[in-house]
Figure 1: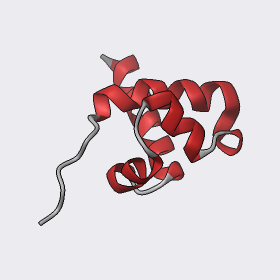
Figure 2 (figure 1 turned 135 degrees about the horizontal axis):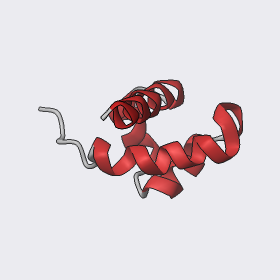
Figure 3 (figure 1 turned 45 degrees about the vertical axis):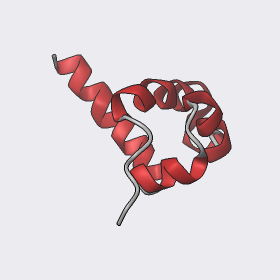
Figure 4 (figure 1 turned 120 degrees about the vertical axis):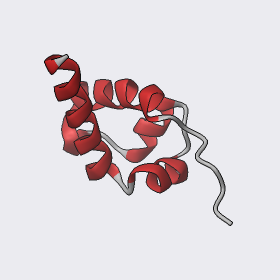
Length: 68
């Protein structure tokens, strides 16, 4: 049985977006994302699949926020 997620997208995405905004995709590491979000890197990988997928989620969240 899979363990439940320990992070919520609505809590992670703003902090991750801030990291990407200030450091860019290439300049942002998974460890920096972990520190910024308070979620361990393995949990971020489990929830989002990797840095690029998390980046895409932040873009989608930003777009939805701007359209609202």
